[in-house]
Length: 146
Picture (cartoon, rainbow, N blue to C red):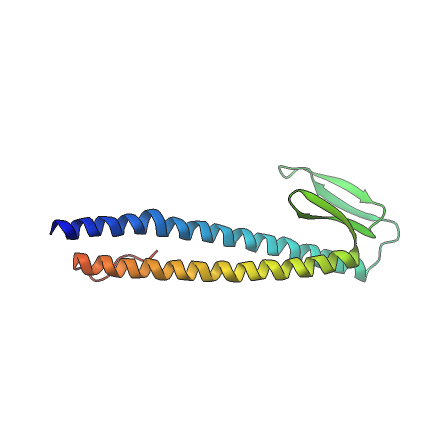
């Protein structure tokens, strides 16, 4: 009887401290990937709009200075843009180069998203397996889902 109680405690600890924490981290990573994909898709759409209707006199826009404080800005030359390529580096690219970069980046982000989804499904399966094992040890049947 004491051995069963120790097994139950080990399984509960593994479930709550390891598996659920791993799942939380993977889901946070996946949410960050969704945000990155959305921002890159929005940038791609903006560049496509700029290509469809060329601007001769410059582009009037609003820039977020932080904390939702916006100012009016005039961009005289929209033929080149700066893109954050990672690690704090920004590269000046033409609009066509930027579209090529964004397409490649979206491919990478979507591959990472797919991998993250597989990881979360695997962890959820492990959680279900441990819950069923706990249920058998306790004689209950099933536990709450994650």
